[in-house]
Structures are given as structure tokens and as C-alpha cells.
Length: 566
Image 1 (cartoon, one colour):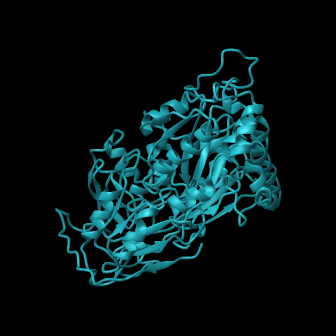
Image 2 (cartoon, rainbow, N blue to C red):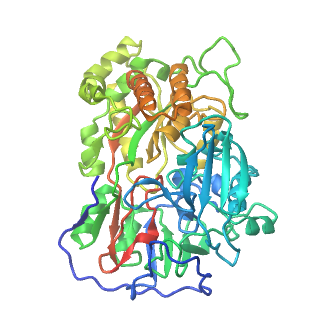
Image 3 (cartoon, rainbow, N blue to C red):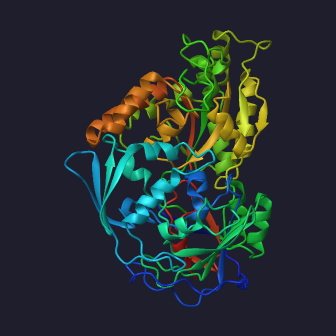
């Protein structure tokens, strides 16, 4: 996807001038500037405000908010490996170089020198790397599946000197570097000195453990805002704006109104509201790389394995699956569900027709493992056909007096506010062909608990993510011990291929394995593929000249230090 700036009917906009709210003195300067240079002079506002829906979970402990809810902490923390604004992955960040050792199970990492932590917490070294990983192990609350999955890859750390360390893996794992990079946002680097001085896990009411990012945390009110102050002469990129704020706004109409009144300067709006903002003279900027996509996940097809302490499995050991009588166990039902959905109508209604078809979850023609037959056969296999869907349900033994019950779980996503309404539209399509689809609005914490106990017996819900295939399959499709997140369709055959993929560092062999995995997922209707979505930010052109961001990282609105002042 190309980086696009659109402007329609640009009107003269008044300048929004915001006053700084009780900010303390600037943080100490980092090492000499690497590639960011000094900030531009004279931005139109002191504090840049980005308005969006609140994250489903808020915390200043990274282990509780990885992936989709990690974006609020990105301005203040950095990772070993970064993602460029253009979407190039595994670029140097706090690590300047790395290489696989000859044993095939270790990575030697060279660190940047002279990088300073915020709040006079000293220089970043290898000891801080080890602390950042070990700190994730001390968590007392339920963590996202990505945390133990990543930590389980690592056998030990070997600190060679303050700027060099070796990470030893239990076995070769193709996913390690991506998992500990900005692409997945699982283990941001934090200060050992600050963390150990606290003597406890920080609460949301405290300041986060110090990081090295372009902004430092100043003030945070849960479900309202999070404010940051610029780090002057930052080693990597000095931000244009002296202050930055996430403004959490529950209602999309309120986000729109705040943009019109210049209370916010960058907005995450649902696609149907974007044209109205453009007509008022605001600009829409799209992310630079494909990655954000929406699909439906199948809940209830769980292998009868207890791989997590919280998993509640079928007491009959002879049962291969936890819920053998779930309607979603029948491939004909899963196929009927897919063929019930009018994707063209959804695209027009919720994405302004700008969504690109997603033919198989996580797969793109530009990614390893792509099979062109998935696109070629999609209309027959997955395409909208209500009569075919009704016939499939009848073949599976269902009728108007015996409808398959499949619950639709509703929850909003801050970076795709239209998902809630899209899910309701899908439920309506399903009812037309003979499904019984109760709507269940559930908060994120309850969803997590029910996922961990395998409580969803016959449910679907929408996922909006930029997660990469390695992490995505682990999270949504796997029941492998120490890896599986258990929140999607599961299969022994798919797990066996995926285990081989993780152990394979040869890219050609891995691509063939990915194609095998994808063929199984496609033919088994393991998910409900919908769309690749444009990642869009609506900006006030009187304040923002450009916002280069990849759009490929869960949370979408990353790289805020690169927002250019007018």
C-alpha cells in the first residue's frame, strides 16, 4: 500500500493553540543524534493530541498490554529491533547489529552506546536487556499469551560486556527476533536501576519504569488521556512537537467533533466518517505498508489438551475435542457461515469500498507461502451465496426449527471503530441463512478469562490485527504447549506443520511449510477472512504536515515521533 495524502475542499482552518499543563523540565539529552536531527522550529501547537477510542486494557506494565493495547507506551519505550516508518522490519534500534551463532540456537547482539534512560536513570546496557525480559516473569496478573510464548523460546542470557550479549534459545526458533522487536511490542527495554528501585510491580497510578524513547511520560488518567514530554536531542529521532497526548474518547462522534473544533489534531475515525472530515478540509494519511486486516475467529474448536493451567478440558480422554457437539465442529457449518457473508456490502458500508479481499488469514501475495489458487477459488469456496449456505446447513442436519447457535461476541477496537457495527451486520447475514446468532457484548478482561478457560463453545468475533504469521498462528490457531494462545480454530495437522515452521530458519523451506499450513486452513474454513484494510489517520493540515507510519503494527498509530509539524 502506498503512502497517500488526500485533501478535499480544503478550507481555511483556525489555528489551535493548546497550553502546556504542568510539565516539568526536559529530560536529560541522550547520546548524539543518529538520524533524527533537531526538531523543526515553531510548531503551531505546543501539544499534539491524537484522539482515538480507549484501549481495551490499560497498564504501564508491558506484560499486560502487549500487541493491540501496547501502543500507548510506544512513545516512551524502545525495542532491541525497530520498524521503520516505511514498514521495513528488523531495523536497528537499541541493538545496532546481530547475528546467528554457528550453533544455530544463539544470537549475538551488539548494543548502541551512550543511550540514556529518562529521569537520570543512567545509560542503557546489556544488564537492562536482561532485566526487561526477567521482569516479565514476575507478573502476578494474567498475561497475554505472547508473553510466555516469547519467554519460553529463551534458555539463557550471556552478558559479554555492557554493549554485547548472547541470547541462547532452547532450540532454533524463527520467531524470536520478530517477537522481541517493535513489530510485536512484547518486550520493550526498561531501566534496571529504576525497576529495582521501585521494589514492586508498578501500578497504573505510578509513573512507568523509565525507557529511552523520544517522549517521556508526564501524566496519565485512565480512560481519559496519557501525556508525554519530548526528549530533547533524542539519540534516534527528536520529535517536532514539544508534547504529545493520547486522548481516549469513547464515542466516534465525539472524536469527530473534537477534530472539527481543533481540540485534537490527529484522529482515528471509522471509515464512514472520513469523507465528512475531508469535506471540512482535513486530510487523510494512509500507512505505508500492508498489514492491518480484519477477519472473524472461530471459538469452540479446541483440541482436548490442557496446555495452560486455566484450560478446562473435556473429562473424557477419548474425545479429541473439548466440545465435540459444537456446531462449529462441522466444516459444512463453517463453510456456510463464510458463504452467508456479503463481503462486498460490508466493504462499501464500513470501509468505503477501500478494503482489499483477504483470501486466507495472515497470507498476502507479498508474503512467503502464498498460493494463488486461494484467490482463484475464493468465489466458489467462500463467496457470498445465501442459497448455498442454506443447503450446507440442511446437509449438516439443521432446519428452521433446529438452527445452529453461534454467538457473536461484540467488542470495539480503538483503531477500527467500525468493527462493532460490522459484526452486527455479519450476524444479520448469518440469520438470513438460518443461524441463531445471539449478540454478546463482553469487556476485554472477561473475554481474556473465558479464552483462557476455553469457555467459548460456539462463538465468533472480529479481530483487527497487524500481527505477523508466526505470532498470529501461535495466538489464534495453536494448541502447542508453551506456544498456543488457544483463541481460534485448532488442528493437530496444522500444529505439526507450524512446529516445523518455527524450527526452520531456511526461508525457502519455511515458505513451503507455510503454504501447506495455509492450504489446510483454507480447506478447513479455519477462520472468516474479510479484508486487508487501509490504516488511516485524519489530520488537521493547519497543524500536521505529514504523518509517516507503517500501519503494520498492532495498535496502528505508532511512530508518533515522526509526525511532522506544519
